[in-house]
Image (cartoon, rainbow, N blue to C red; front, side, top):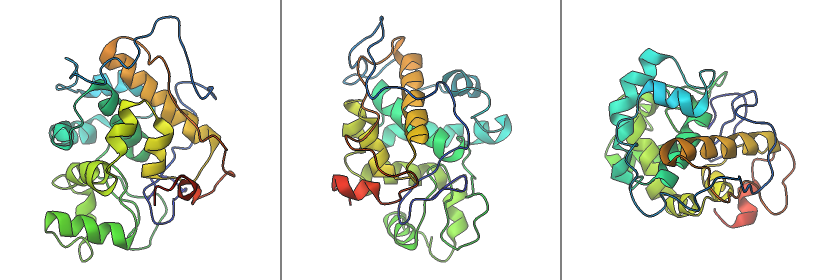
Length: 239
């Protein structure tokens, strides 16, 4: 799935077209003021009332979708707690992923794609098997009505489903600040720049929730895939 021209075959994946928050960053970062794993175990106090302005503060105005659409989806998006996305680490990873996939717009459609089971919704659900599995889980006919995946009713629940049911280890990766693991679970056509953007977005959101950057973040695989690779996640045994 993809919000732009890139697509991870058979998985969820996207990259927004330009760099944000920072240029290429090292795989781990230790800033001068940190709180190691802050928010990894307990709920923070700032995450239940997300606003458009808060999302812009986290990710920048150029990367969050239009106010009307984003605000329309916020009530359903904030039910991320139903997927145990409750602490700062998990929320930061979840939101960093969704802003990369769909600019946090519930009705995002894979740009330029015309195939039936293209990327749709917050997390850009892609592939007939994902539509089938999500539809079976929710009891809806996503194969027959794929546009339901980008509807206000189902976009956020499908994102939570993929995060916690289809890929059961995603929250655990987020707790460890392992954005490489999160990215493997989500999937996108590999580029160092895109992995860096997603990692930097995680750091920015984490700082918003906790007031400090994470002490250490895993951003990249130990061995970098070739640019554009769509099966790099297989080497990690995630599928």
